[in-house]
Amino acid sequence: MRSDALLAFVPIGSPLSIVLNSGQNVSSGIIDLLGLGAGVAPGNTTIFGTQSAIFGSPDAMGVGGMRPELNVTIGTAGAGATSTLNVALQAAADLGTPTYQPSTWNTLAETGAIAVGNLTANTVVARFPWLPPFPANLRPRFLKLLFSVATANLTAGTIASAIVTLVRDDQFNRYAQKNYTVA
Image (tube, rainbow, N blue to C red; front, top):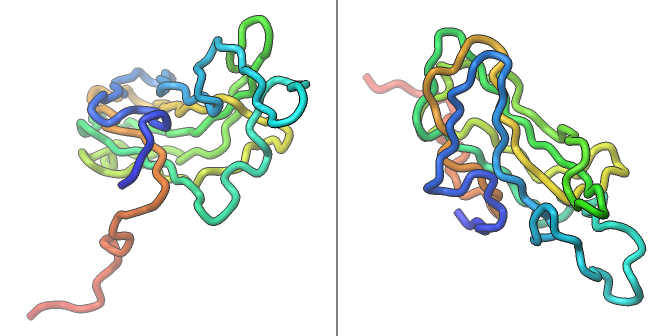
């Protein structure tokens, strides 16, 4: 799997704990699409002329032949009676001067409730294609993942990694039903 260290919500080797009480959530690291980091003013990002607005990713991000994918993997298995986990990909625009911090977070995609029985070690729990921002005029600079527990407490569990890949290199048919039996 090819990945870019700057495009890691949860870097490989730095697990994120998802031990949460009901109704709580935890965020991944924030990816700045400009690459400078929250709080840093963007320089002149245009080729000609002077920048007239704060930086924002174009509305067509994620459209084209080489479409990146998000891959979120469980590290330590989840535990907790009837607990569920939701994974949401969120985007925010830049507030601009003087803080250059993320504005209100908008959810672009989410998994829905994943039962604790499916949070086994080394399982991919979220896989999204890189989606265009919504609403269409959002023009985000910042992205993050939000991990939420909606029902019972999650008493164990980690996210091993949450990275952006350029290609899916997993064996996509490994979960396909076999249409034969061995006698």
